[in-house]
Every structure is written in structure tokens, then in C-alpha cells.
View 1 (cartoon, one colour):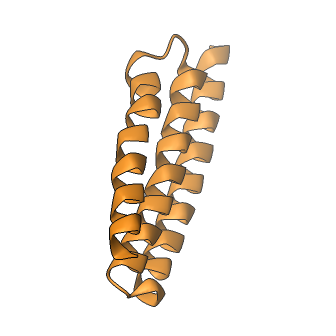
View 2: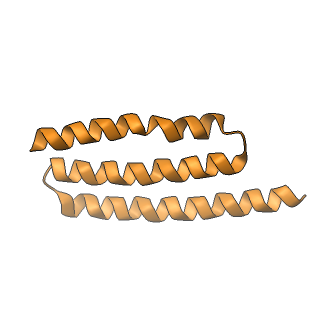
Length: 88
């Protein structure tokens, strides 16, 4: 069963490259913002998969929650910044 979760984690790590491309080569700022939010969501899932693999879900849930809050606050801060600089 552990091999299954390792394979899922490897596939998810490869799928992370798609939103990374959107962040790197997004045509607009908002595409880059959405790409970074997608990277954050997939990273949270990857952290939780590591918790299942190492059989320490309780510790990794705390890390994932902290990262989720950081990702949310960062996305809101970037959106407000880009909104305010766009008007000028």
C-alpha cells in the first residue's frame, strides 16, 4: 500500500509542473496568480501524502494547515497588490 502512495506522490509532483509553467509563462498577472494558488493546493496534497507514507498524518496535517493559511494570505495579498497597481 505504501508503494501506491509513493506512486501517487510522484505523479502529483509531475502534475505540479503544469501550474508552474502557468506561473512562469502566464500571459497575464492573474494567470500567474491562479497558477501559484494551484501550486499551493497541490503542494498541500503532496504534504498530506507524505504524512500517509511516513505514518505521521497528525504532524503533517498541522504543517499542511499552516501552509494552506500562508497560501491563502499570500494569494489575497498578491491580488490586492496587483489590483492597486493596475489602477495607477
